[in-house]
Amino acid sequence: MEYLQDKSMDLQKKLEILSDAAKYDVSCTSSGVERNGSGNGIGNTVKAGLCHSFAADGRCISLLKILFTNECIFDCKYCLNRRSNDVKRATFTPDEICKLTIEFYRRNYIEGLFLSSGIYKNPTYTMELIYSAVWKLRNEYKFEGYIHVKAIPGADEQLVRNLGLLVDRMSVNLELPTAESLRKLAPNKSRTTILRPMRLIQNGITQNKNEIALYRHAPRFVPAGQSTQMIIGATPENDFQLVTVAESLYDKFQMKRVFYSAYVQLNQDKDLPALPGGPPLLREHRLYQADWLMRFYGFRAGELLSEEKPNFNRFLDPKCDWALRNLELFPVEINRADYRLLLRVPGIGVKSAQRIVKARKFSNLSFQDLKKIGVVLKRALYFICCNGKMMYKTKIEEDYITRNLLYLENQRPPQTGEISYRQLSLFDTLSEARGI
Image (cartoon, rainbow, N blue to C red; front, side):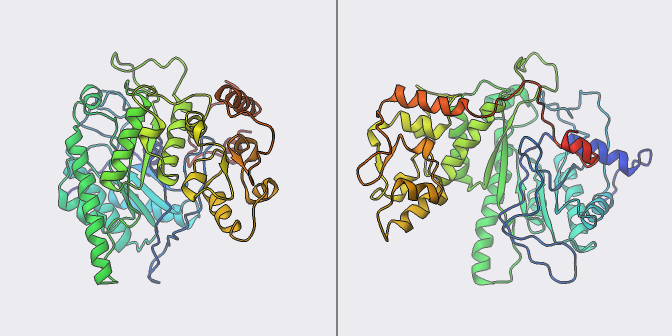
């Protein structure tokens, strides 16, 4: 296979272009997998997670996060790298990908690689390029650290299977939540084409688990699972539609994570929203909070929102909002409530709920005990009682509790309009990274 050799551009310039082009993809996490080194290579992945660094907006930057190429035959209206845009283009070779990864790893800049790509020539050709780079990195350069790659919808399925045996995580971006939105803003993509490799990866993971159960040393297929990403704010779907789609992905595809990316206006197009207030970051935050509730707290999308109430409360987090709409369940008696109900109390998290269940086996808990356990009492006190008594004389009334919770929210440090967020790059100086 012949690769594009761009000798007119040095490696440093390519890195600047292709690391910057990759920053809008937020679905890169590196925890949840254990890959032990063989003793003959370099790099190691520990299940508890890698040595992460985070930008000011909380996005992970610990991986070398790059595109193989920002050349693209597609013309998605929201994408900076669409074929109709006049942007500087660059393409790595597989050996350049390997060299960058190894050199940055040796300098302790990174702990792994996140590799995505524009569509160069066609999906299968692009996937071949990615596979070649990862194969060389694993077999010739002996890199045994974390690798996350994007599977290209429409690529040859055997390539996806082969790549799944080399990497830790794969992802296929859903891009937009509905087929109608895809037709409008990404006419070269289809929901069917995107879901097909998702199903392929899911089936491969399931089959591989069965193989490992029989043969302990069988090669592992995408051991950290798969993830996906949805752009929010570019199309008119409400929050209820978004969390319902996410719930379906978790249920039907055993998705590890669904990421939400607030739409950033990069192109001028009549089909794209103007967004005078900037990217919908608060909406993105509420969706992540709801996603956390569905993944760890046992909530379903239909409990958090409905067709009658299709959007999240911008002033209250989804858990508080749910509690205020279900006041008949409160106050909860801490010393008797089951674990599932404890998880639904605002101010009680997974760890504190587990500690409550363990601690109350030995004695009845008081509010002072709950504080030591880690319960956020300033939020929980409106919804709980200990030994039949509430912490203060409190009305179980929606307006009263809402006013008090909003007062708490307003006590947080104010956010000024002058603060801006950006993903750090490998070329930031220490002063720039600290905002000095």
